[in-house]
Length: 397
Image 1 (spheres, rainbow, N blue to C red):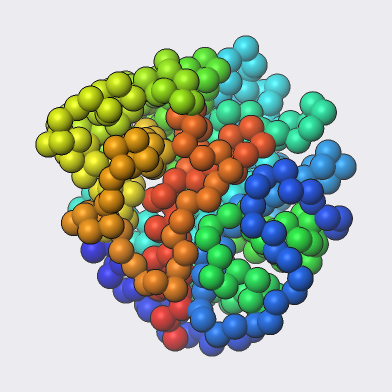
Image 2: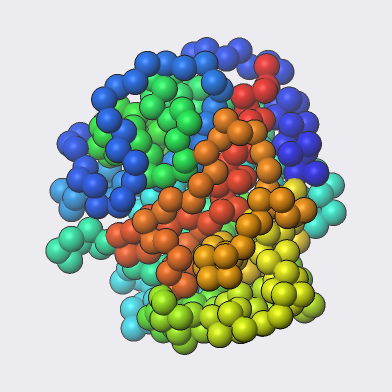
């Protein structure tokens, strides 16, 4: 089980670690207001202590978000030569023309990214999410994303834990008990505040070309209609396409949405064989299908959200990205109570696992952790994974 693997990896990596040691940003993202400085609590790490979504800044603060060309202890964050190997990311724009728009807007730590589909071991990682950030005139994002994976040694992980512990201390309890959201401290202090500066320092020390191992992408084919997902492994200084799990060597998977935010009509191209998730992507089919078929589709979505049921090595990209909004829509329309479902994610009750992203259930929002235009957008799986990571770090010596 994933949580057990997380705990083994964390314990192995942390035996030597001793726990210790801008301007205001308007509420454009619908996140929880950090409010006044709270007092420190002893409840352990929480969701926003291990997953950080940065607020979108004013144009004057653009450079406070790291670009791909940022250089740190491990080299350039994402070398241009690798970026140039990606497929076209947005229609009617060459990748070179939007390169400088990309900024790091999300950060996650992961003690146990699976080595393979057999879960034969863990890779400790920092994972960065980048999107093109635009200012025309208000701050927004293009509908594309790049996910960067940086492998860490045991010594690197010990340094990361020390830095994450320091960030938690700086938060002075502001993250305790909150659902995953735009980071409350950075939202209060701004992207040039002390907390954001320390987070950037952590990235600059631990992430760069030297330990970049994987690059995933979501690209836009037609606005509000068609998207593609894929991933590359970084090998010998180049990009090698990684086959998508469950799709028989396919290296790109599409999502098509011909409906509206109120009445979805989605499709996966291709869909995973034998999977029933497609029932939830069609509003008409979801509303009219029989209970048995609906339950099979719900089980599929819940398993995609559950870190102990499927891993990034055993689930296809697009299914993971569409499952949460489609499932929530089905729950609302069919008045379903899934709290006792065998595949529902149940975890430590101290974590608030609600999905409160501003984008809601818009089927065009395929982001798992980032922004759709200027609206925050998460998947339930990212929330659940963040809870597992936070619990594992909290229980470590």
